[in-house]
Length: 344
Ligand code: CP
Image (tube, rainbow, N blue to C red; front, side, top):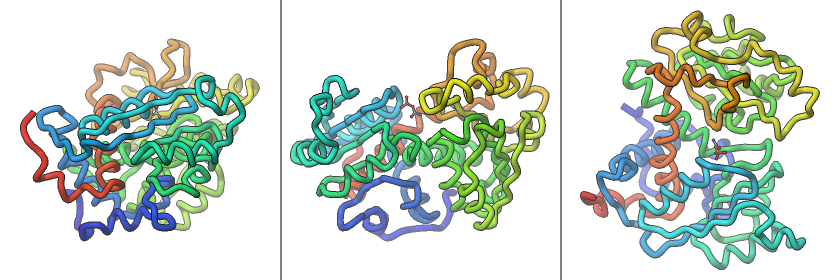
């Protein structure tokens, strides 16, 4: 059901190599075949993610999980995914308790930790920092979010989720209508998703945002040049109509001025009334999370939590299988997965 883009063993790993070392730094490293090859591995690992099977292929390996921006799901799901494959994890969170607080450079930090770990995940507030961190070391690095830049593994798990939901609904991403809603200007997750979805064919992207938070023009031009239809909307009523996927996002307060934030109109709150009024009966509602839990926030409202179309927690669960697949590929153990798997 995942398409015909079969890749020979090792091809996916080779496609992720940058100067001989495999990394996941950007969605631009993936095409449709490599995406689907990765998803097949994630599917194989579903029973491990669901704790019905164990698969200790990473016994003895150690992950360095370095997070210099706040995170719940990315940090913990990378850690849980590594542990479920039998590996161990060392974490560091924030600058305060790292020697960067004493002036150590990111480059020195990279050289040091590359001597300690088999693989590294880095989240850092500066755009481009994760690629620079990976440049001079011989250990695989995964971008866990670099400022306003990219969040490639979020986009991978988002598309994995869309494929899973669409399989149940008998739909395909090719030719589908996908509404991206909210802070499209600063959201790295939504921008990575917009870019990665372009490996499919003939998608209609409905970009729903106030003008101050619109998707950058260069990303829209790239999508149009690739043959996708892109329309921009300033209201939920026009933007969500006919959408097969409604992908809501949080206002990235940490990346904008108070002036822009205060100009964000209330009408961008997606709640039960909006969904009842405009959404398709079989729409899939996603959000990279976190959502703003303030009841007045212009975000995805909690009154939708009982709506079966809301797939946000299936989406977070999928982070484990997809991140296990990323580890298995980068550490070259994908061919051992089937034989190592046994009942929990
Ligand atoms: N989606 C996401 O990146 O969540 P966290 O910030 O909690 O990791």
